[in-house]
Image 1 (spheres, helix red, strand yellow):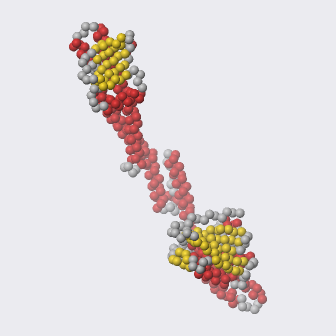
Image 2: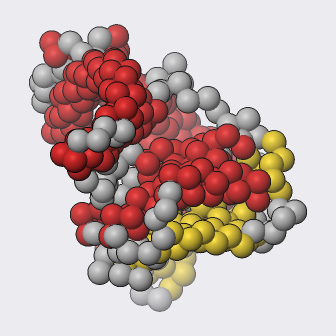
Image 3: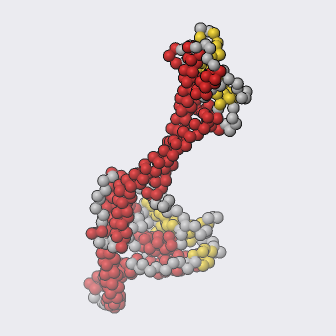
Length: 470
């Protein structure tokens, strides 16, 4: 009950109604006490009129008049003369005096609460103005116990009435909330549950129908989100099917091109001048096609294993990368420089770290060789208390604006003609799998620098801040 919206609303309604009734209860009790005392003063004044009519009334009649007025003594003041109109023995000393001539609201409330909380019986003096200009002042003495009993009886009636009103009000509000809020909310939840079972089914998308504006806004927002999600799921399914087809085509095409590459090796040994002139171009085209197929297959592998972390020597990994790229560069005037402490040991997956560095160095080599100008590739490693940093620097032409805008996005960040732009994406994914980050530190006509950062702690590094566009 307390965990439901309607149950909590019911409980809060009862509490708030009772609080409101308490705020009404206090001044009501104060007003009842004032009316009670004023009524006693009026009855005492009426009783004193008998004395004015006949100065020689008996003691028995005077006592009966005082009993009917529920007072002990009545004092009237006329023309500045204080006169004891009616009197009888007072059983105990007077404990308090209350002046009912224009009292403030706070005084009435304070006196009423004091009377209710006072457990001792006593005699009180009450002073007021006579009714109908019957004099300047009237003063009576009376027992306080009947007043206290009357106040408690009145207060209990008020509390019972308040409780009854709060229950009725809470019940009405409970049913109103059930009809106007809880049922529509349950309808939305039902729609969400049905949609979760089959998000590709467009028929499960909610149709806004709530009459409450805020709830209708929520339904419209949910409808928009479900529509977008359903479209995204359909697009994802089509892309997955397309990706599977591309992977199969790339696999078969790679095998075909590998066979063609073997034939081109024999063509290069031909003595025909035309064949010799065209063979290098054919070999280059086939090689690029093979590389495209291989990178597409690597990127399409969704089952990339998590890195098997161990202590690896960075200088050995970098030496293997440089040896491989030196062979690929052949006689091209390209030099390699490395600045890595021989004893630097990283906590990483050696194979995946090799692939990340290899992709970056290969991209740098291809960018330099595309210019036809001699260049240099440098690899430098440093460390501090938090991270290991590996910087790959080249003297190439720098990344064009288009490549910078689509950095680390597949099939969009390619710079070299015939490239797929997957090298950076694969490298970034491998580094991110280590909890690290790959960022472009600088690029321009003087060259490009990429930095790999691997954390020494188990916490992952925050994403890199994108290089400011020039």
